[in-house]
Image 1 (cartoon, rainbow, N blue to C red):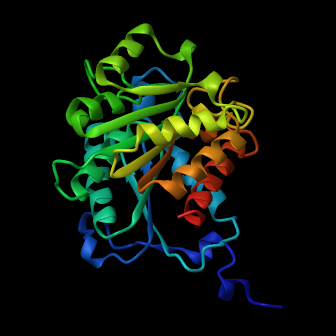
Image 2 (image 1 turned 90 degrees about the vertical axis):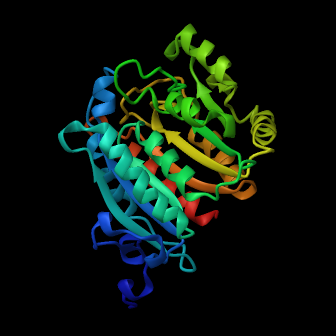
Length: 306
């Protein structure tokens, strides 16, 4: 019988682990195709009056990743560990996350963030912005699979509902943001107004079906046709709760896994994707780890399609 470890049959055998301390991370010393970085924080959910538990999302995703058969022998993946929000300091955690992401992307890797609450996205985008060439004409697209716009104004402090407001406010002139899976019952009229003011497009959840797949893909292609790079953010609460019960804000009327996979694979194959994140996994409410398995398989799909 063959020795499984010699064949790198499983994820935990096939990937590399970075142990040198993230504060010393420098792009010129990194050599990998993909870099995974966790965001161990759910203070943003708490501030947004959601149910807590996503702080352990990265751990749960890694547990399921480790069990997957590794089908990427020609690619290298490095796990850089977690950014932890000490004393629930989201703002510092976002800054640290962005610094590491910057080095990962500058080294030529595609960054994969795992969370953790969706406030991760602001830190992720800041890191992307710092890593990419400083050219005025550069336009970055954001495709957010989500039931929510996450465009709440940062009146007091950042939370899981504010990341794309922060991004659009700070970088909006060079950003195209499309939210896919928006549910009317989960977004106030004021959020639709903010989306309109920022020029944010969206595809409602009821249109996110396999029957309507070609129309959805056409909207995505048209929306990002002038973008040089694409950042894909996946909030697991966009899926129907049948597929993703273990999230901060579950819904029975989200999109299906088959619809998501069709759209996701199209985007991976046709766009210049530089960063991906999967957020809001809440293991406390997961059932038989089905949501964690979904998150892990999304990462596997990404690596095998890029």
